[in-house]
Image (tube, rainbow, N blue to C red):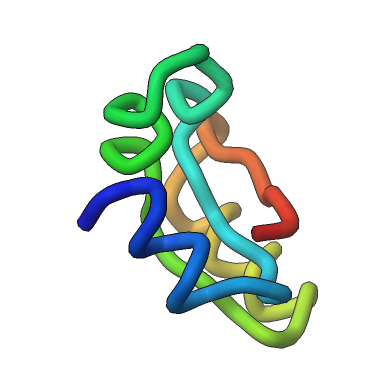
Length: 59
């Protein structure tokens, strides 16, 4: 999935990413995507389960 597809499909949701998504190119953003949630609490739980190298980002 590309950055554009992620933004179109999950716009307005809480995305869980690896910290690599903060790099400047679209490929790192897409490769860092782990999941998307409507509820912040669910996103936080999922991020915590994936380990400390995760970030929650509004898509």
